[in-house]
Image (spheres, rainbow, N blue to C red):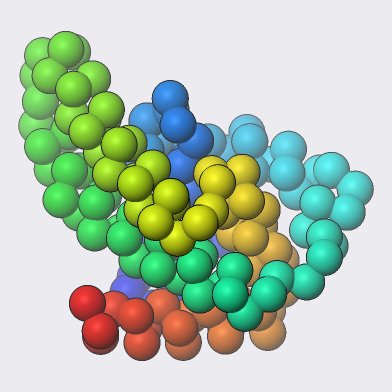
Length: 131
């Protein structure tokens, strides 16, 4: 993934209890298969702003914990790192007033709507500059 692209067709695994570093492709495929899943009600500006902040936080968390997770040899250490990262992800979502489910729904909508995707990409760039 580059600095300027949100991944297409996948949901970031922000579900509590799942590794925040594992991509749940099956879950993303299921979301896209459900009738109306990507055509839910429009996303409010407030929700988009919260999504963007949570997305940027997630990327920072992933960058911070990813190398340690990859280098951890001990399964218990890996689990500990995943739990720490998931806690931080959950805190970010809570701070933004989002649930993992709402975040993933917005993510699916962004991926399925090119104009919304471009708008979010711009907001992500702006948020990264601020932080």
